Image (cartoon, rainbow, N blue to C red; front, side, top):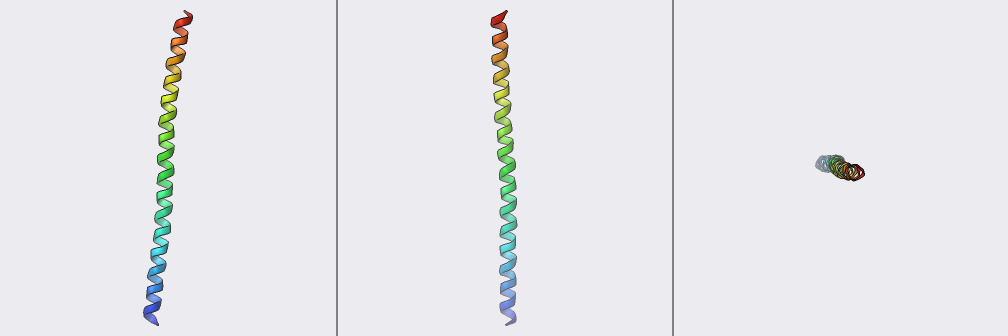
Length: 60
């Protein structure tokens, strides 16, 4: 009977660890996608700045 309890306890620890690991991976994935989005926004802003500069030059 005691061995069964130990097995259930270790199984419970494995399940808790897997859930914890999955949550960490989810957070890491969200952070990475946010930083990737930020880079895309930065490149879009740079392109818009370049386009607005060209328009300003054409007006002069």
